[in-house]
Length: 279
Length: 279
Image 1 (cartoon, helix red, strand yellow):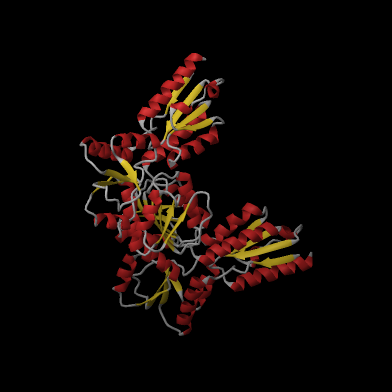
Image 2 (spheres, helix red, strand yellow):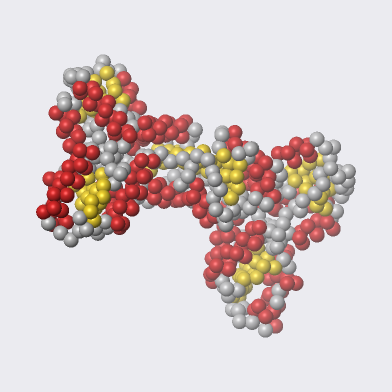
């Protein structure tokens, strides 16, 4: 059984940066270090951080906080304002690419555009972007029809959205808007990971997508793999692997999201190799 | 034989305005009235204007000029500058929608965008737009591959281009540019005329496209009609009509470009009606 692990699987630049920042704080043995919401969408990483003394919190008013870490997805300006007034230290681990998208949302709003955000409005990144986009903002996801829009529209896109979704929505918007400013804020690394996963899913018998079930970009890899491969599983850890998945397989593809740590990918690879030997 | 004449066939707002302006000048019996190039792309109208004493000229330095009319397609800023220094009167008959596109080209250039003009680079409208777009300008037509473009691109489109061409090129550009500002400068009236002609060509046995052979938007109607109707002819006047075209036809569709005068459309309709009676 041949195992191919996607080169782009695992931590992206922004996640790596946030994890490094956070573990460094933990190493210093600081007390009262919290992340505002889970730092990234990977339960195993969050558990590891908890064991190092860094827990997520939803309550920015908690008296226990000494240091609050803003997670990769970013937050809206009102959270910066509120937390800025606190006595505790604020560490901003927002992904630099998300920060860029936030700045563009602000620019578009200042320039008088109705801001259209392509993405999942419940996702924390989009929630943050909405905050930067001013009062005249609408969101749309790939599965929704285009909402009513104005004639002067500015577009930004959630950094982890597939290019096809972005393209389809731009196509609808150009039929309505007459002045359109578009910032393609899709993260290059994400785009490449999606591309690599599509190619991978075409040449293997089974795809194992590794990563948080709550991770949007990991779930996206699962959906995309299913287009070209009939045999796709989304797991968080090697414990979920089942021998029977591999009975008739020659080639296994392993991919993972931007928030999937290398150690879990390695562990999954090892376990599949063991299953392969025992056949 | 049923004859359906497209409602949107014939002079558009900008052409009507230019013709009115010019005939008014002719009526006043002014001497030395010239248009810079043919006022519109319709040889019959140009002949009519000549008989009223208004001739096209390519030479803005001619000593015969007392009044120079800038045609509907507009001119580049250097022509305004040169002609502005002359002693003669300048009458600007540029279509207001083209003027708008010229302003957008200027804005994009000032804002640091590489300006991409979608259209036919040899067309006088596009030549004018190029002049307003500054030094960093590229053009692309519907049949060409996308030229090398930068990451910050501003798009305007020749007012008479089909929406599909615009859409296809935008689709290519969003795969390359990361910041994109788009002004959809396609004239609404043109878009509606194209739409109506497509519908017309689907329900008739023959389409007669009336208008200047040198008119880009009329030629476009010819090309578009051929997609849904096997029997399409492009004529300038009723003299070109042939009886044998109509031997097996039940329904005739007549359409015309933005520069086709009503009198020619009426004449063509009358002649087809005569052919129909004589069958």
